[in-house]
Structure formats: structure tokens, C-alpha cells
Image (cartoon, rainbow, N blue to C red; front, side, top):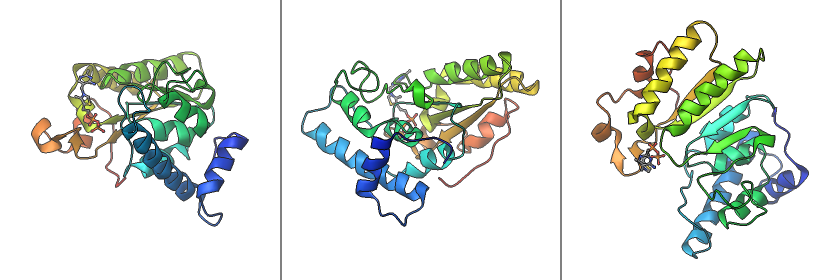
Length: 224
Ligand SMILES: Cc1ncc(C[n+]2csc(CCOP(=O)(O)OP(=O)(O)O)c2C)c(N)n1
């Protein structure tokens, strides 16, 4: 993996994973165990605010993050624990954030939906559905403007694709991308629902990867 995990993060992963598993499988299983633990703590009333788990989507964060470089930038929506863990955030600091502790990755001020760990390339963790997509596109433009070859990876859910700012961001990404000025990979995490509303009920076009082609952005469908 391109990202370097801290020693204590690696030790926690070792504690729940068999040594013969591949790095990506270890990552995925570790995320599953972590999410099960967060749910338990949430039910015990230990987690401030709300909590959304990533169970079933582990491969999407683990696979892509294993392919990026240490200085690339990652943005995600509010189902964000896995992205932080896959990037190498210390699991104890991620859990501390859910508990509202000052030792958390966002100093206990963000909670489950607002994890940040810039040192590991994680630029959030956003509770405003689709809001972060504009920030990610602006950051990608900024990276090119500064003359770097860094890239942005931006995750969002199927529901986020119906938000107005999402379409503004796609238009700018398609426009700047035409001149090579928007180094960004968008990952639509289509889990079939915008929370409780199925894709069939919330999207006029259910082939979501086709929707971004309207903005001159090439896309393909992958089984996550
Ligand atoms: C701007 C905004 N509008 C509405 C909400 C309320 N809301 C919370 S979750 C959600 C659905 C998001 O669905 P999706 O992006 O598919 O994520 P999922 O939870 O299904 O993974 C909505 C509309 C919000 N958080 N932000």
C-alpha cells in the first residue's frame, strides 16, 4: 500500500486479522470489526450526535485508497470512518472522535460525520449531503494551479447526486477537466438507497454513471 500506517494503527489491525490475509482483505475486515464496535457504542449512548456505518461498502474505500499516493487528497460524505481508517488514521483517535474526546482526529468537535486527518490525506468527512463535492473540485483545480501532480478522490452517495451544488461541481469539473485542470476521481457509492429512499424512487435516471457523462466526465460502473 502507498500509504504508511502508524505503528499503533498497524498493531490494532494485526490484533483482529490473520497474517496470511492480503493487505486489502485485512483492511476490509478491520473496518467491519471497527464499525460493529461503533454501533455497539452508539446503542450504549456513548456516541454524541448521529452515526452512520459503512458495513457492506468496505471494498470501495479499501480498494481505491490502496491505489493512491501518500500526498493525494480524499474527501467523503458522512459515512466516513472507513476512509479515515484506510488512509491510516489511528483507529483509537477515530473512535475517540466519536466519543467527543479532545484526543479525536477532529479534537472531538466533529463527531462521526466530520472526521478530518490531513496528515493522512483525509480532508473530511461532511454531513451536508453533496456539499463536499464542490470543495473537492476546487481543491483539484488548486492542485493543478500550483503545478503539482497530486490528485483528489471524492466519494459520495447516490443520494448526493440530486443536490444542486453537485451539478455545479460536475459542470466545473467537466469544464476544467477538458484542459487537464481538474485531477479528480469521483466515486459514486451507490448502495441502492439515499438513506431510506431507493434509487428508483429518487433518481430520474437510475444508471448513475451515465448521469456524469452529461458533464463530459468519462465514467464506468464497477461492482463494489
Ligand atoms: C444538504 C442536505 N440535505 C439533506 C440532508 C438529509 N440527509 C441525510 S442523509 C441523506 C441521504 C443521503 O443519501 P446518500 O448520499 O445516498 O448516502 P447513504 O447514506 O445512502 O450512503 C439526506 C438527504 C443532509 N444531510 N444534507
